Length: 209
Length: 164
Image (cartoon, rainbow over all chains, first blue to last red; front, side):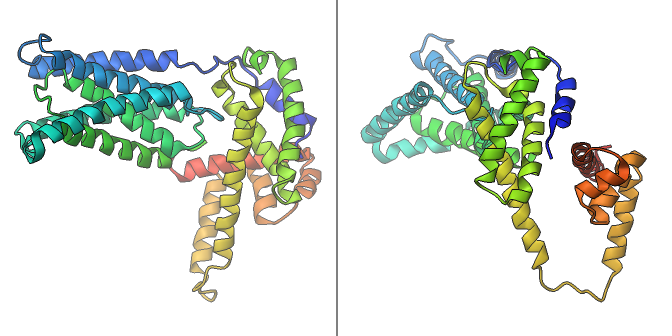
């Protein structure tokens, strides 16, 4: 029976707590992104030509925006009753739509030739660098999620993997000189997809509350 | 809830009293009456442990309802698992080696809990006594017995997983 005495136990155990806020999550993510970006630049260097080329700045920015939207969605689903906001969902959809337009127009122009971009020699370096950086960020997001109470831990884990993958890709895109949409879809998108699956699977097992 | 997050005990007590009433109604429409008290207790525990996840810019009731739903799903899964074990086939009843080994494991784990808590768990979970009988025997309130059993089992699970 949950009587007054047990309520009294909870009350006597009450300590002030800081209500949940997205600011620390964004600050930590920003800090980790800068560390990863610094590592990428130190290890591989900035892409040739710096930011003179449109894609050199647009590509990291695109993935950074995806990551920010992903982190906002992750935060929204990390507490009971939380839902992804309509604006955030539209923003994510819009970003995906922009990429889809680029991809379709390139495929229409180049036809089968566009598939040649898949076998570029730098693919494995992209895949492994994004994978390693993303796995580290995913671990950080999952550690944060454990202190929260996501209603659907698998979905929150998926968002954690997606955000981690996008942040890692944004950092790596500072170096990567390949801008072909088919290549980006296959190697960047593929790695982000794998990290999302890993996040979903892992969080379903480790996040219990 | 905002006041409770700031540490206002009176506001928290009022909140829990109202939440308890609401939770009773919520669970009694969905599960058997004898499980309602346990679920209310567990939900209040979760509310207490996860109170920092309440976002003051959102309404309180959907937050509480989401926690209650989560606990309800957990409960339904647990009951389903228990039923599966009960109807499990192929169990060799003549061979009690497994039972003896399990009993030894349980005793070893219980010895690592404080004596008072271990005694209560033995009475409720091993000897099959009701909460009320155990409360009368050990001179504790029913609520305290439930809390001790709940916390003790959680601690046992943690020890079994190699936590402490």
